Image (cartoon, rainbow, N blue to C red; front, side):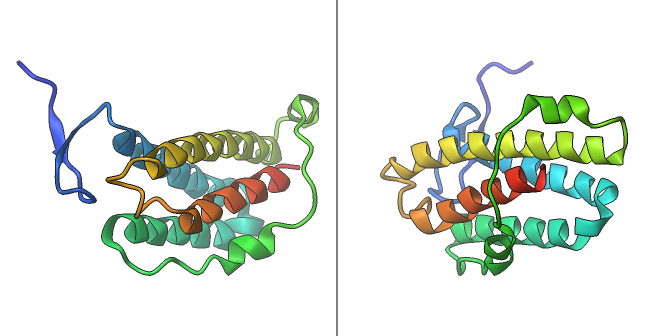
Length: 154
């Protein structure tokens, strides 16, 4: 039986952190985001390679944040960020059941997860012990990715 809430070793600070810390939530959400892109590879085969590359970029971004590695090249994400976006519930309702509807629904879902992670990212960026790692350079990757995902859902 657990007598105290467990803690984990934070790779960024080298300290023990509780599971209620923002850093734990951020990386858990990041893993969810990558998982959804992995699922999308099966439903949106036209973009299968793009989703795979996006997962690689997210992995490299985590290495940048945690280990101080180089910021990943996200030219692909910038190149995919074309056009405008208008959010629409009716779009979700109008698509007949098909693989496309599953893809669109997953894209809307992952866009929400990315937006939530931008929130956690901005909180971590304001904390002295994380501000060096959670900077605007990596934030821009997630922000641009959210735009791409929203536009792809159209």
